[in-house]
Image (cartoon, rainbow, N blue to C red; front, top):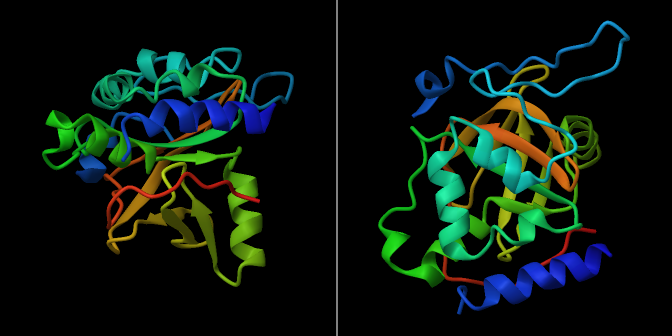
Length: 202
């Protein structure tokens, strides 16, 4: 099922492929615990994120991700985030969102936005385990074939570095959806080169 979902993403994206901390001051990176002791989803800017909704539905509902949600629709990637596969979306807030002039070109837009999506579910516990096992960093292959690097920034905070060496902090962790997880980041991440072949994480 996962391969079929990713293949569907690749098919959709293949047609198109060929700051900052102040922006998240009204967000919360806490992991609320209910009265029963069960983990619940964090809210984004006061908006509930529902774990039984798909990734695209939650991103569309987020007040801080209107630009990303629009770009996902324009690039054709939105359909993949409604599928039954499992994905991790590193989601820059509106104030940080920047595709550097790529909006007029659908192929470039899909390339840039596909770089923010990683096949598989990489929540905070998974990332911390992979960082530990990887000797201090976890290298994540994005759906457009690029690489994001996750490292620790302090005892528990996870920092994300793109191929250009630019870094972003994860401002809100583990926004769970039925087909993956959203990690809210405070700066834009972008690939360094042209579109590449879609890749899978092992």
